Image (cartoon, rainbow, N blue to C red):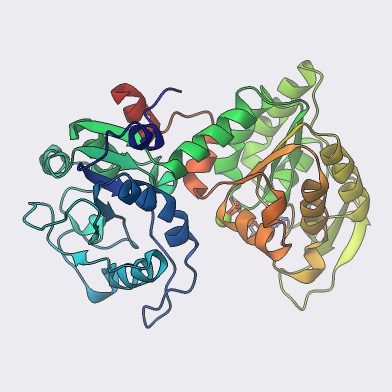
Length: 396
Ligand code: ADP
Ligand code: MG
């Protein structure tokens, strides 16, 4: 997909003295007192800001924080803690500007300001044309650098991209797109996708799209349980979606026709409750009792999956294969994480809980690309063109 890159614009000197509006994702977790508990997203947004400052631009940055009601600011909706952290990380003062939509604030070339929570502006969510027109007037160059919102068409993610004189992708957004294209458009084969977790019905549509592209599809979690049902196995009280069994069967058929496969678990870890106190049993997939819950893949299955991963050319990972938060059900996901870490394949991973698993098993440095956008990453896997890219391509 073709789109303008902010890095090219800066390199060619076009950003000097210009007003640059960066839509970042600074939606960080906070504790009850408003302290930032984790600042990965703020740190991830620094390259775009530094690039703009280095190019001599007058820089405005905004982001959403939480889900406030438009036009009704509460203290907890404020980006003030983010401004503080950003100031510290950049080593310079970053003033926070409230009521900024109509302009009337000053920012000189070489300076950066943070514009208060964009979801407080009336019309943001619905991408109102009036708001979009005002946003476009604030800047000469719009930079989209918030992949986490790339699947939403809001005023600061879509409307402004239509009204600003120039609209381009920031380094973070461009890197996401490059990594995803590398993994899905022209992958080194075999291409192995791992789809696990608990969002069964939303992820089944992803499986259908992936089925026509991947060489092996590893399923885990609630999805694997639905596939086991489709294969005629008993799964007791496990998380699954019986009404999706036909879809699961179709996925297996599509894959089979292409000589590809969906390896199903041969052994599983079961318990009668999802709890840290639960007693876990390893059983063959044919021995699952009526009150058992399948909460992880067993060691034989893990070894088989690790083998597949070891021979992959490209790996796309979303969703843990077990309830990895609880030690007795973490074995499968841990083994998979380690197989991905040791593999020579180009690997890309995304999803909120998948990132938690990556952190838990300390493989951050061994995954080639970790996507920051949960919902956006899933929609790309589904084969959708994200609104952010559609509009940037249109403007390119
Ligand atoms: P992601 O956020 O990475 O897209 P999901 O939100 O779909 O992933 O699923 C993650 C959750 O799925 C984890 O909290 C994990 O405990 C749960 N999970 C994994 N396997 C099972 C299973 N067999 N039964 C129930 N829950 C599971
Ligand atoms: Mg999740």
